[in-house]
Length: 163
Image 1 (cartoon, rainbow, N blue to C red):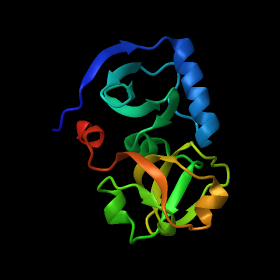
Image 2: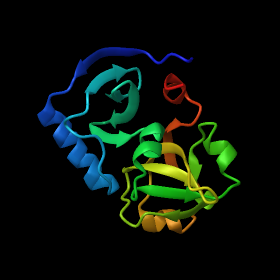
Image 3: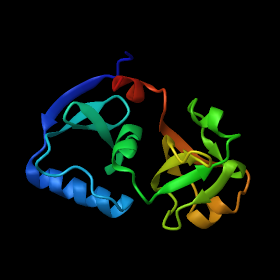
């Protein structure tokens, strides 16, 4: 089991849980954890993590909450996705940033600077979470260069923490 440095883990108040859950539901289009669930917020070396029970299902990057890959697998969001072709999959799952030509589809509501989840075209399974450097229209245009900066991917320390 790979270790991710976790410190200052504390239980969130139900008012904070409700606000975060509402924000995530607004962003992703699906209900996530409720105020009845045991939700903790903890600091890690790169960003804050959100525990729901014993699992890390959320992250907070620059004050913005989002789901981890395990959270995406559990709650199955309908929005904020970017689809990549199968040629990009080995690179994305090794932590590479997503390049424009590998993108085949994107949610229309994506703006520059949004946190998104990346999935493959064939299986539609989540591969990574990243921050966009372009809007949805620019992502779909397949323009060259870096399009998404990866912050969490299958196989990284955060993923291995849940094994």
